[in-house]
Image: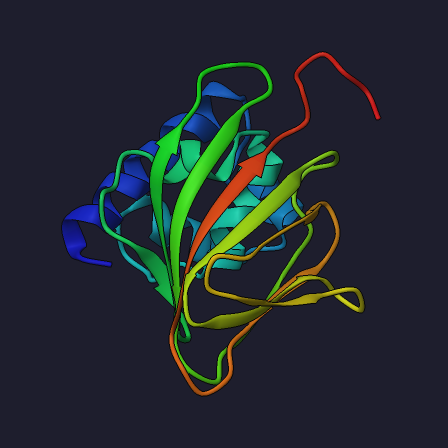
Length: 176
């Protein structure tokens, strides 16, 4: 991520944290992130992982897309790049992402907020995706939908895979 994007993300993260009444220490502890790392991130210094951004979004009770919406470059790590394409404003919230996975990449994702459902459509290449232990192997044009509030994976073989990922969050006002 370039410096301008890091600074934009940091300012946005800090404003969300303050608006929700979280202290730096409190949010860091709840998200399982070192306070020093969160401080650096808010200052626009650092290189946040996808998991770190997801954990912060979960603790701030905002969709991942709300956290990364101000930046227009892909967020990524270790062969995986994710870019927010669009966010719906309805209830439930729906986010759409473009995702690219390098050859021979395995990304283990933590569970999202309760009630979250994810749908992955492979645009090009092949991919194993889904809840750990119950994943599906997909080729271009195929889709898989799964409960994303539990650990799940994305795994490529010897070629790149490009995906459209749609995340539907639990409808506001509904309890599981």
